Image (cartoon, rainbow, N blue to C red):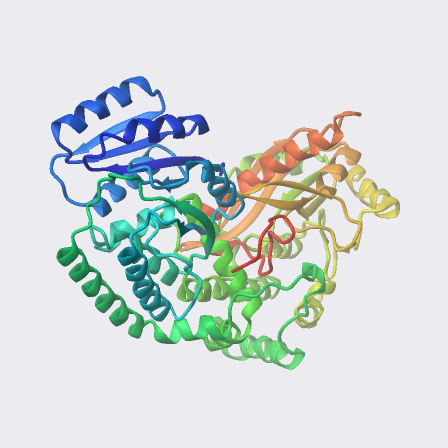
Length: 560
């Protein structure tokens, strides 16, 4: 997903300032969604002239004045429907420092999962009563979130990730007037979205038009905080847990993460499966996964981070909640049990749907060697098991197995054929390349995953866009395929509601890496691979199993 920003401007009778605001914003060459909140005729005429003179401006009008919050929500929906991924909210009265727009958009590009919120820095033009009143709201927001993460809940200069924000708007009735800015950022924080605070200058222009109504709006603010405090009580355990155990990501490479779970526990699971059957073993996994969810902060937070990024690309994917993190981790546990089932002959080939099976059988019949490019998505090991049990000895898995020694040992203890055609490598050096070339020349298939960087510290990687943010992918699979001069196919097996499905599709008849353009060619192939992986993640969100900080060292700024 590309970062596609837009700007949303709610307006009510600010005819003196809107033309200058839009003219300044047009310098940044992003679409501007102006929402007229039932303004008077003079303002409507000004808006019509502005819209006609500014190609980037898109004007929509609410029939009557229903409040700033309603106008902003309308604009956010409009921007999302137009294909924007993020929207910068800007007031129409000229209070905001528009020279800060590039800073806000750049920070949002770097942290696409976050709300980038302005923290107002006032000069002498701001009324003292407004400054003191904001302090009261800040205090209650800190209470409602049990956090100082939201620096300024009232500043209307902020960037929203549109997918989760529009999802919140659609499922929750948010206030339509002055309290909107505060309530929406609190609820987005409750949803797990991080907040990036940026200081920005805010002025009160002399003779400016204010729509703040002392009694009505103060009563509205009081009622909002009453509701939010009540909502906080129900969320208190989760907020306390997040405060006690904030998201933490290890700086270690994935291959150096300690394997969780004991040998005894793994063997107990294997024995339970063999003695009591599949249903009992899967029921046993539920409390075990719940324990890992509570105690395994790195894996849990990595799952939430992935789900948050995935939802930012499309709103109909699962929300980044603990329940969905549990479902994600449980899917991984069940995938490992599927490996055991496959290697012990308890998975019938008829229960697996095979997309493009004719092309796969044609490849086998041709006798040609090929690279099958997979991912830590679903369960490729199950396909290797079925190939072995059905006498197809041509499928080899090129893997890094040191990271899961105990699990592999437990699996090998009940499946004697598990270690056959399992090629463990730590780097793709000359000896490994020669071995793999011999197998290709014999017409064998090499299954290699392309979504984890090499375990060697000097491993070659390429940075491409994945779920809206740069991420590092290994160069090795593409360099290897070029050296082997063989066709490459995408090949994954994943669980769906009605069973397992194999996805098989041609990726490249041959990968060429021209001299002088090698890095660019690798980046092109890696980006195609990452794009296809995003589509698979959208199709079955809980089947991508990389429980570590996949985007480590590719972003600036701290994790929240």
